Image (cartoon, rainbow, N blue to C red; front, side, top):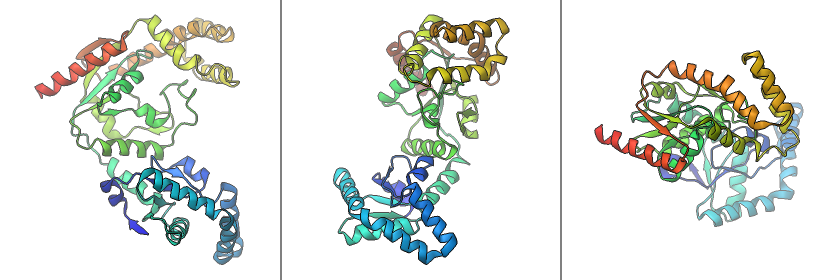
Amino acid sequence: MQEITVEELLVKGYSNLVDVRSPGEFARETIPGAVNIPLFSDEERARVGTTYKREGQQAAQWLGMQIVSPKMEAIMQAIRQREEEWGEPPTIFCWRGGMRSRAMATFATFSGLRVRRLQGGYRSYRQHVLETITPYELQVPVFLLHGMTGVGKTELLRKLEEKGYPVLDLERMAGHRGSVFGHIGKGKPANQKMFDARLFETLHENRDTSFFVMEAESKRIGNAIVPSFLMEAKKQAIHIQLTAPLEVRVQRIYDEYVIPFSWRPDFVEKIEKAYTSIARRIPTEQAALLRQAIAERDYRTAIATLLVSYYDPRYQNKQSEYVEKLEHHIDTTDLPAAVEQIGDIIEKSLAIR
């Protein structure tokens, strides 16, 4: 068994990560890219914890042994499969590099498997993330994509990333599209710890880049707060304004939100709940039109009303707070052509610098 530090993990690029904590702990936060091979289920972990409080450490350890013993062969099989698939010894971790990861690594070593164990566990990784991103300063230019809802910013970021451009996709990191309807189809948004970890990993992977491409985002996206250094980078960015006709924007939103998810039993409930949260901020006449369109399942009319009466005015007001001049303008009706135009802007801007 090899003991490694967080710094060694990052410098050497070990990527076969195994989180041995319970599924509930893993779901809340983990190191991006890790898989969950738990020693205990959530219920089993609770039983061990209760035993520890009532009867002490020795009784809790005995109960833990009774729980784990019958499934140890299956756990070791999973560890061995990870090594065979990755061609790299798994790096095992728990919350703070304590008994669970030690027990797993010890069993694996006795079974003839090669494993690494992360010293300090997830807690040491989280501390390293905070120590890195809290004082972080972007030393490279940022190309900031502006545009009202539906112009295709997220799709453009994806296409740029596929072409090899260094992208900071904050909405993807947050598991949220940054609007009151942004949770639809996304599952549970990421908490701050997972957002920070994903941001850290992206910065680490692109530590030698000469620029970043990013969407203009608000301070809060879902459950996550965007760090100050990115908000400051917005002010110094090279601004690219994206536009598209209303009908194009409506169709894109319909394709993204309605077609994939309208079959779900809770779709209408989520739409109505989101509408209720913003209805008071929309002029009365438009709010009534929006409610009627939702009730009649006329989602294209609902989307158009929502854009014109709510999102567009709010976006224009917010943008004017920190943007004095928009240097570049691109029509995104043709997304592949827009990708090429953004690439040209980046290339020419970097050449001048």
